[in-house]
Image: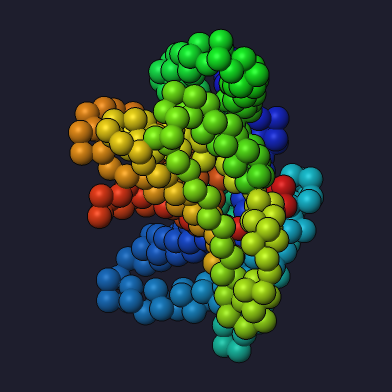
Length: 359
């Protein structure tokens, strides 16, 4: 396991293309190319009086080609994803070449019709963007997130481990079969904690892991701990929304559980809810887990009571920051984690793209 932390995934040995359907990638491409265009004009033009005119001229040449390239790369992202790294990079340069040529063939775009300079500039901008995304993917390698995840679980594990063992000891004489099942669940849970945290898993696996965790916590908390699962699919308007509304609850749950999510995302949220909301409270409390889809977005909410006498808040922010970081790592700007505390309830909401295929 230590070796897997120190090493980067094998897929990063060869430079990988960014996901051109990711909102963060698109925004960074637009920003980087426009900044390069601005820098090019600023270096080439010494006369401040002509700077605005040159900027407008440069924008006219760049923006159309940039828009065409972004659209083509967005549409071709699934095909690019299946290519070898070298072919993928060649395809990207081919798309940029077509976009730059299309921009130069616009009426009045270039008086002499020469393509050498605009193509050279476009290739330079493409190379710089690809180098940046490659550097960024290596710097924010999932191996780093795995190391942070290991540090997180190392902090959470001791109190949960000893509490679980105490719970097993409490029922080993009166309910030996239940104690045996609890030990099996504990082994399965820790096996999952030690798995590779660099890949995404199905939401069904996350829910199953979370349910095992809840069963273990019930050994010591008993009826004080209640967890309610709610699944809903609001796919949007039109026929798609009508189909979602007409499906049974089991069908909706099955469809949602096929979604791919970062591993070990749900269990830490439930552990926080139990540790900070149920355990310090004098009476029983209910944790509500809501999982739904709205259009192309998967939404997960963990809602727990706020114990008035809660005194141990250390570690709550650590788990949330870790999950937020891994969401950014996998989905960039398309995912977010929000916290809301009101009405005596503490809610953690996660939104991320609803995807079922392995990428």
